[in-house]
Image 1 (cartoon, rainbow, N blue to C red):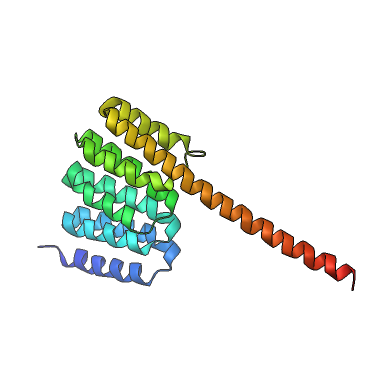
Image 2 (image 1 turned 120 degrees about the vertical axis):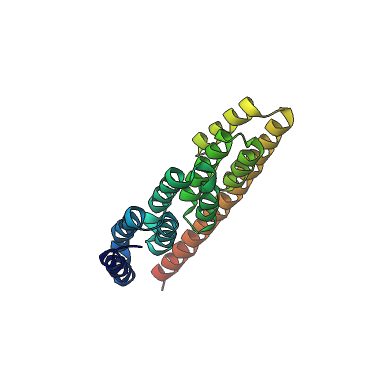
Length: 196
C-alpha cells in the first residue's frame, strides 16, 4: 500500500500535467513517470510514458519515444519495445523521425536475430528516403543485405531503391512544373500590366 502522501502527490502531478500548456508537458510527464517508477508500479509508469508520447508537441515526440523505449528496455527488456517502436512509427511522426525510428527498430530486430523482420522495417522505411539525398539510409540497408541477405534479397533492395527514386523524381518534376507555371502566370500578368 502506498503512503497517502504519494497518492496525493501522484494525483496532483496528474492534474498539473493535464492542465499544463503543450510545450511544458514533457518535463511534467517525466517527473510523473519517475514518481510512478520510484513509488508506484512499473506498468503505471509505462502508461504515463505512453500518454506523454501523445500529449507532447510534435517536435518533442521523437525524444519522448526514445525515453519511453529506453525505460521500457530497462524495466521489461528489449522484446517489450517492439510494440513501442510500432506505435511510434504509426503515430504520425514527421517523415524524418519515422525514418529514424525505423532504423533503430531494424537494429533492434537485427540484434534479436529477426533478420526478416528487420528487412521488412527497411522496406517500410524506404518510402521516406530519397536515394539521391539520403545516402546514409541506403548504405545501411546495402550493408545489411550484404551481411545477412542473399542474391534475391539484394536484388529486391535494388528494385525498391529504383522504384523509390522514380517516385521522388516524379514528385520533383511535378513541383518544378508547378513552380514554373506559377512563374509564367506571374510574368504574363506583369507583362500585360505594362501595356495597359
